[in-house]
Amino acid sequence: MAKAFAALLEPALSLLYPAHCAHCGVRIAEGLDFCGPCAGTIESIREPRCEICSEPFDGLAGKLSCPNCRGAAFHFEAAVCVVRSRAAIRDLVHRLKYGREIWLGRILGKILAQGLADPRLEDFGADALVPVPLHPRRQRERGFNQSAVLAAELSRHCGTKVLDALARRRYTGTQTRLTRGARRQNLRNAFAPRKNANVSDMNILLVDDVLTTGATLDACAAVLLENGAASVRAITLARG
Ligand SMILES: [Zn+2]
Ligand SMILES: [Zn+2]
Image (cartoon, rainbow, N blue to C red; front, side, top):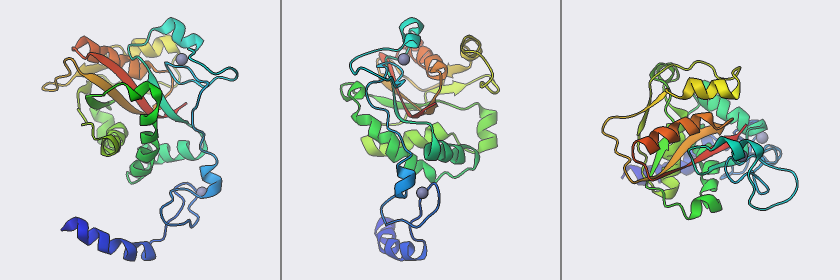
């Protein structure tokens, strides 16, 4: 009933509120999210890129891993990152997180869902989508967890359930000025399994907004494996 009413209302609403580019705000055709120039700034990550962390390479295509991944041995098998964290994407993620524009989750979720077609996820058979948790204090400040918003959107596209399996137990503060090693150390004990969330023998797909070094996803994956998950892969909207 509510759905039918919404369908009736939608044409009227689109007259009142015509479509605008989510980045620059110019008028655009119904059904689009971006104007042409802004859509042109969105860079999909395609091969050649690292099989494990999705870092793009210049040069030859093929199944390659980057120098970072060769030594690092992440706990996740692969992290699929859909687009570069630049221009319109960087702006939208920022507005979602710090501007509380939760409606952008729908647009970003649509882009994130493109990653489901990546060969590294095609044969995965995820049993659950697990969002990377925020510390409770930060979640209170922000009012929501952007990774949970993205996981819910992804679930609408693929039908896999969202499982809130992880909690963040220590305030790690800002990570941006720390070295890679220091970040890992800082994050090692930041995540814990949530009571009543059983991940035994499950293939888990971790969901986050942006992959920067992979340390956060690695810490989450380690906790999930310690608690019986069969395997962990990850999907992020963007790569820094
Ligand atoms: Zn635009
Ligand atoms: Zn890599």
